[in-house]
Amino acid sequence: MIRGTFNPATGRNWFAERGVDLRDRGIGDIKEKVILLPRNIRARCLPFTQVGFEGSDILLAIIDEPSRAVTSPPANLRAHKLFAKMLDNTTARYQRRGKVVLFSYPEAEDTDLIVELFDQAGTQFTTAGRRVRPTGNPDVYASMGATYEVNPRVRREDFDSQRRTDPEGVAARIDCRPPHSRTGFYRAWPAKVSASFCYDARNAILRYEVFPLVHQVQQAGQLVSRTYTGVKLLWVRGDDEPRALGGDPGERSDIFALALARSTPAPRSIEVVTQGRERVVSELPVGVPGMLLEPAVSGEVNRDRREDVRVIDRTVVVDGLVEIQPIPFQRIDPKTGRAVADTHPISFVSVRDFILELKQHFPNLHLAGFDRWQSSELVEELIRANIDARNLTFSNQEQFALYSQHRSLTYNDMVRAMPSARAEKEFLDLQEVIPGRKVDHKPEGSKDVSDAIVIAMGLALELAIAGGGDFILR
Image (cartoon, rainbow, N blue to C red; front, side, top):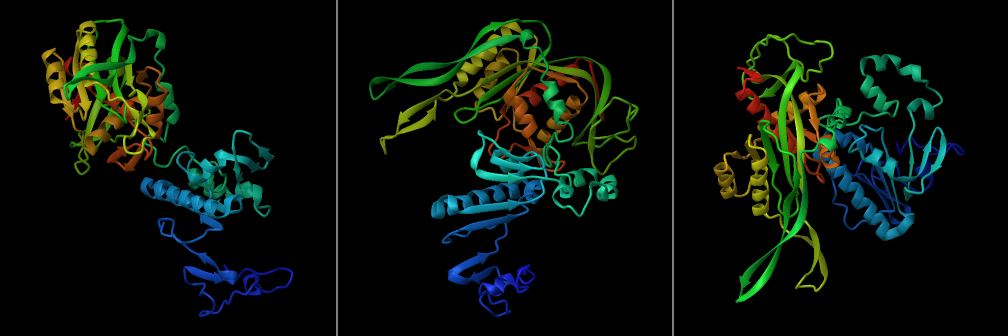
């Protein structure tokens, strides 16, 4: 590219005019990663995974095609970190005169660095013209347009043949209209996730309060106060419905989430395919109009993939959600004397008492499961209260199966959950880290409430299985 860059006014190579020796052994071979320019300016070529440019004073950084990293969450995280380090470097050396330039076609609306920067931009350029956004970052300028909008030599219809064979790819590469996500677990129907949080909050079965819980302890012969984060039940509308409880424990940095779920008869049955067991022929019709079977199931035995086919004829209702956020406070660091942020740990005793009180109002609360429950004593006390409590240490495959079940039910409008902005975001942000095998949250995200919900749903369906509500083909 450097050898082919010419000054139209003179017809000579633009870089050669400025003193760059383009010979193979000249001032910095252009085949190498470092090209020496006049005045001791170096042009370096770095793979996006490389971050070792310490010692450089970056005046201008150009990042080519950062969106290609979107399909690999670990690589995408490295691309984000590389951009942040380059921006820190050039800002520290040259303030606002330093620049980081990125160009790429977008791959996804979610987690795509180029899309994120466009959304942050204080000044945006599109075919509609220049748009100044007072709420945007004044130091970010961004332009976005379809290929045929910025290149007068091509038309939209020139890509019709490619559009027929690869509509999603052409929409991203040519039309600048990327899909919601490339690696999101719910990328096919994200709107279905939002629609599932449709349970009328006026029909909630409980209200609760998170409060500071103070204990007095003896320390060096003196009474000392220790503050925890507690939870108490303010109001409850009990019933005799068979229910299950799912939980994802947190203590300081994570919330402690609880979900109550029950199942009701559904107007139809669906097949849910999960990994783990040999798949067996289903008697149900495949591809019935109105059914969003996902993944699709053929009518043949597949002994290689070892799948489990579950036939579900129940709608799951999550009508109780509890999100216990550790109470923040500031303390003085004894080493530095400065105020630092901290949180009061969640009291597991308080959570235990809360669950036992729920049992009094919901006598048919028979099953409870917790991801990484941190005290076997608490589980034992719930068992003593006639709650089949379980300490669930999920493998990647078991967790993938639970979320696959939730996805299939959600896509078929068989989930009704209490509104929760946190839970909705966790589901939408969930990433398929290893296709068909592992799901996880984004590097800076969480899945505390979503874990509690899928556990509660799985146990609620297990209660229905015990009562003959649905069945598993083995």
